[in-house]
Length: 262
Image (cartoon, rainbow, N blue to C red; front, side):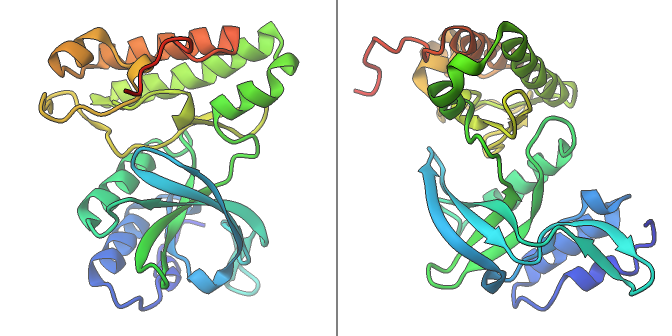
């Protein structure tokens, strides 16, 4: 399905011109249906349950009644969808800042299909008046969660496969002259025991953009130059990956026996 005349049908009136235009532009630039995002009515999401809260947002699990599209049905001239699929909803702590919200989506879309978790669209919780990303749900949750619950099932080959998937994703980020800047086991999710995806691109920035006044991250995964001088580089991401390697091989988070939250 290459014709784009149908894709705009995925954007109903949502009374938010900025997001409306953002979605339409992504649809017009897409070359296949897997590259688009859509506006998802909040009423189409059921069984919403809290999952976890990170440094910049809160994640929920939900059932999307319509489900993501996977192909075009020429007979009925409508989309074929995986109905009733579980999805992950993510709200940003300051989701009123739409610039940051939309930038994270842009960053994540750059790596869709390249070891980054798929994003399906945007919705809005009318009760809290906050926008939320709608993404693929990873059955095993974060890599940290997988190591907590399934470490005995992880053979050396499975550990190798996990790390291979993760490092390929990191290479894809670096090849676009970007830095992730918040790389740790909580920002890696697992669909299966060995199929891993990178997520949370809220801090992802070009290598030329560095502000030592703004230091974020999980301390045990942060490179020494970041902690001491506020410097972020691609090498800092690689240091963080080294900490993830140690964690996958041993099941223990880096410096787990040293307090770092005070």
